[in-house]
Image (cartoon, rainbow, N blue to C red; front, side, top):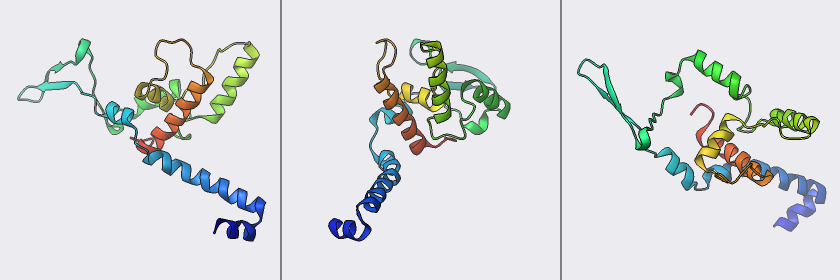
Length: 165
């Protein structure tokens, strides 16, 4: 069957169709693969708020080591707060799929000009991917391979959760 298709299309067109098929299928495949680290991250305990009968907050029951954690839907965060955060951390957040190619190019240029690492290209999604699946905790600066895995995990997070999750 494959040989018949290859003969009908010719080798160059067959290769192009094969590569295009991989590119189109890869995102779906990545989103379907089990990711225990993400499942564990999403099921982490949250702090519990304690309210009085009139609805006023009495206090918050903290987690281990006094940590407070609360999942808040994006719709409950004031838009101006979101805009300020994105302006500081990831200006093109709504435009990229978890990895910002333009930021990577600009960072590479700045680092080359300086002769050392002076700028990174991590997006908010890449920062989240480090929280979900830490690669090298306390082992020094990330290696190139670590950044590639982090970028793939960020892309995968976008596929599974979406930008507005």
